[in-house]
Length: 405
Ligand SMILES: Cc1ncc(COP(=O)(O)O)c(C=O)c1O
Image 1: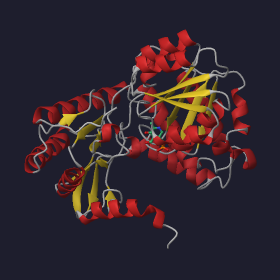
Image 2: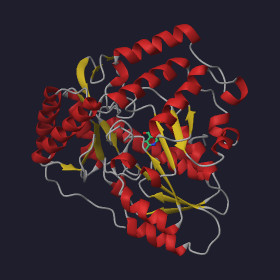
Image 3: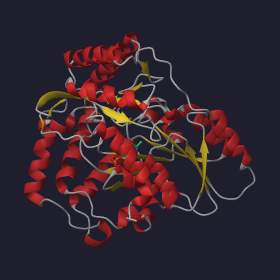
Image 4: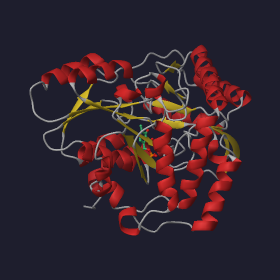
């Protein structure tokens, strides 16, 4: 008996996928040439699985800010902020994020994942209730597990189900925190935030929104779904990440809650890990100012998303319910999902393969993230590849197997 024998079922499932001729969970880029192109298996490949919504990873001013910071302040901080202190850039970045969102407090984390671990496990505690959308990202579920609040899942994007579950809690002690995402990372659909805000107000609950995929993407100023829906005043806490539209790595949380600063000495994923390196802080600061000032980038992103979403739909693919820069195509079964994913890669198109149980409704998904940096020619090349492959594998207009419940 080996130590990892308990994971045999996963090992076998993984091997079955690899037997199809490629490993979708371990793709190697021999080179990354730009936000939208790389070399994979010796072939020039369009990158559509990157979350690089604004294409800022190669923005010359972000690259320059990052290079200047590494030369001035070194490659890393080598410790956590509570033990080893903050660099000037950390404080400057937190002020910039607080200002961007018009909030009193901002706190940065080393990843978006850690921001969710830290915030969800400390905002609510024993005796409180955490109302999580069923399609929440793994980091929100893991944050819930790290804390001690009772976790109640409500049906994805379903205000009636949320209300029902809150009504059942009437009269019980403890606080209630509703958790939703701006744009959901698998299907690209947005939360019905206006309805959630009405319910939150009516029931006296708190509302947290994870704007990981909507920062820089939605809202006139790029602040995300809460801005786009005009409900920022109802959102008590916003979390997000620097790893997507801002093209770096790191996470953050903003809020007007009183005593928020106590989080710095109780939030273990903030306290017990090394802080963001100066190069990342510098490029993120620069990227944030681009988000604030360059509305044309957002318009180009949305126009690309619409072109791609409409193109796939017209070909007969089953796309997600709303057009956003995350464009998901459902494939009826896993063997064909793996085969289609590999056939697209062989044609120079890289996107993400997402398999159940990580997907909603137990459907395998081919998930693309469109960027403002894609050209229409690149997107048309990808659509042509989808057309050929979809036909060859019989996945156009294919009926979807839906999980019950
Ligand atoms: C909704 C959501 N929240 C948080 C995260 C974690 O962010 P990061 O990858 O920057 O740690 C992700 C990552 O994909 C996400 O989709």
